[in-house]
Length: 469
Image (cartoon, rainbow, N blue to C red; front, side, top):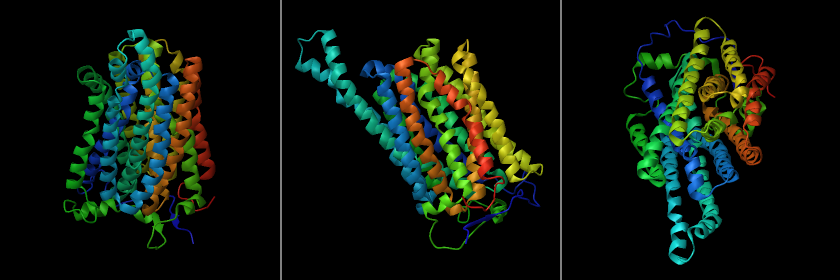
């Protein structure tokens, strides 16, 4: 018997979606927004400080590529196992556990400063000239600090991986079908708000406190979020602040997905029988790594291409993420608007994704832009489109899979996306080491979304189709 069956048409309701009785579900969306913002602040600090850390710690381009790749590979496994644990534990317990653990990992980056190789050589070998000591320091400290950051990034990636599967699962529990892409777009905008705030504030903290304390300060933000979540969150059916009318509204459209009765969740391998899962996985492989590239390499691209200082790079990076913030909300709104005008879920999702895929294509020209503002606009449009694409791709999972498997499927997609992204980051570091040019990488990502959408259409001609792969 199939574990999934669903309808192809849009969710309908006698009550207007613009006037539901209550809006407490958006408070929960706000909590997700801030968890994602903290998540991205913690992972982006190293990208903002790449240049000064490379100078201070003697890193090469390849060294930074190893560090970025370590996070991506670990984040891939964090997504996979985090998704399974979210389905097993539930988001009420699972999300604060992951946020608490990744906050500790973020703080651990600053502990790499305790290696103190430079100071040890000063005390042990005072007869070295400054030049000689610099040579010794680079020879011994650089590998140790690279190793330290690799370990910290691995722990950070493993623990941050549970955030998005848990957030998507929360949206599926708290929002009706017609609002899922919009809610996903709103909480996913936290990635951009975190990224917008990160460059100028990290620059200020670095100037005033040094790089170690910068990691300590940003890492502590997660502890505040954990306290807020434990105080506010509960499931819709148990929440004391949620009215009956809003609970009925949240449940609208759930009949579109029915589940075979079983006491336990669906085995991970059983999910691979479904075409929708394969469509999601392939889209994650080809288009998913783009966002990791923007996180870890865009600041460096802007700084080196346009010869920016750290302050200028920070503000232009914030501008990129500000533009990108629009896309997640706009992409989710577009799908919801189409649904509201009578489109099927299939048509609304795919048209929204097509618009996003087309908007990415011009990123091919970013390396040849004649000015920094033009490069930021072109790359920002691609980043915005990526966020809109992601909002609808995540929602496609919620549209086609039963609730007790959503985190597992999202986690599986995140695993393949970031595992692929690990190789992309490693290859990017090697390309930069040899050519100093970003042209190849931008060219690669410019067509990956259209390819992904084509594969989705081949595998899932209509969202909700029950055929197995």
